[in-house]
Amino acid sequence: MLNIFDKTASGNANLVHVISLRNLTPGVQVPFSSLLQVSGFLGHFERAFKSQPHYCGSGVTDKPDRPVSGQLRSRQCSASLGPSVEEQLSYREEGYIPFFMALAAVMQVLAFRDAPLSGASLALLEEFEEAAKQLKSEKSQIKLGKVDASTEKDLAKEFGTQDYPILKFFIKGDRKNPLNCAGARTASSIITWLKRRIGTSAIRLLNVTHIETFIASDDVVVVGFFKDLKGNDTKTFYETAKDIPDLPFGVTNNAKHFAKYGITRDTIVLFRKFEEERIGYEIADGSRLEQDDLTKFIKVNELHSVTEYNQLTAGKIFDVGIDSHLLLFVDKTSEEFNEMYKNFKAAASDFRAQIIFILVDTNESQNGRLREFFRIRDLDVPAVCLINTTGSVRYRMQGGKVTTENVKTFCQAYLDGKEKPQQYSEELPEDWNKNPVKVLVGTNFDEVVFNTTRSVIVLFYAPWSQRCKEINSIWDQLGMRYKDSEHIVIAKIDITANEVESVIVEEYPSVKYFPAGSDKKIVHYTSAQTLEAFSKFLDKQGKSKNHGKKSNTTDNTDEETKDEL
Image 1 (tube, rainbow, N blue to C red):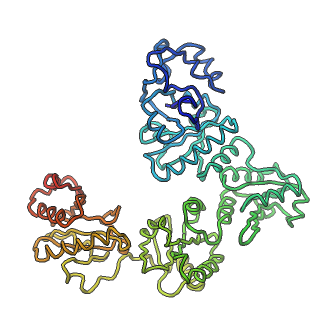
Image 2: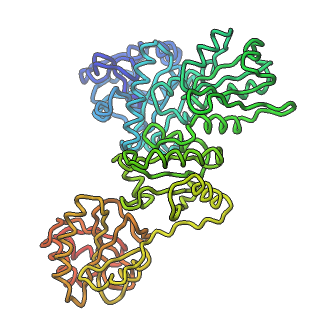
């Protein structure tokens, strides 16, 4: 259902501007037609409903004279619209106009499908609402709406939405053929994408001053030089422009433009304000311009030869269509940074369109999760890693400095299939079993924790985590307390340096208990992280005889440990 409101209700109607149901007095009869006083709504429904009152909020009914109430609900389908996440959630229990009605009534509706609000969803939602404000100020015919797919499961199923957040564009009430809005993640790109779908996707450049101004207007612009603006290749250019909303597209057939830039045949040119300032894609005589090839050419070359990883560039990196990514993990404040970056960049030109070169600043806290994924510890920096994103197979350049030659050799060995995937395990220390707290690595983890004679409790830690450093001293005390136990082993593993396929670790520090036996049970410890709490937990486990057979994983609390095991 579309949650309908206006300034009087919300104070800031960012999304759809129609009459509010929130402030209606329960029990007051309101003709349905009076709820449709917005451009496009009334005319669309007059023929179907004329002025007959309807029971608003429950779709088209056979009870025309029942009252409209601000407290009415519908459980059919909803696309709750609102100016903010908070208001969206609070409006969910209030009056609605059905989704299909608003979809048919508004000229264009962009539906935003959102699972429980993740960081990516919130970021896109902010941009989405900003786009709605701008469209409203322009008095655009395009209206934006949003759907919480975690609640409106029928809608999510109908439109096949599985990955969130996702944008879909409905044109003139066509519910069966919405367009996916891919690659638009900012307010400006969302608006550009929409306008290119209902209007022209490239600006016609008329004279020399016009093309010069256009080229200077942004860091990267795309210009299509075509002798025939009605030809098939030009049509392909227009279609390509529709799906790359972050870049300005221009088109020309002006002979003076061809002469000024030395163009002799149909060519698409990227004009850039960095590195090589002009890169051309020339269409050979007798060849046809393919949209996929042009899209890849543009997306590869709009990036710098080395792209620094951050929230703004992450989407572009994964949208290029190149599966091989080479990452340099380095502290940008270090004395060696400038030389390493220069060497890394020099190698990039040999692998353009084959491997994306990426810089990751290890001094940036937001890159912590990326470091975890590649198992990059402080002592590993600088490091050069490569990943094939289709299978998440990772490689690491071994030994030596970050020189241009070393990087080239590593990349070529990977492309030739000669580079071996990285084995994520530290070498097993000779004294791993001599101290009260046993040291585990990737290669001995399963052998130690999944045994039939002794139960094992394991601390999964990250060396750089302050909380992990604090719990390490408690863990050493716990090891001393149980060092003579014949039934319990106290162990730990640096999960940033060792990959363990049998266990999923979502946070650090994390503690898991592996009861002795052949069924590979795992108990996730969730109680207090104190010496006494750990000891109490272990003592209870030792006394428990009922290990259950319903699941190989459980969570514990002090009160429920026996039952769950």
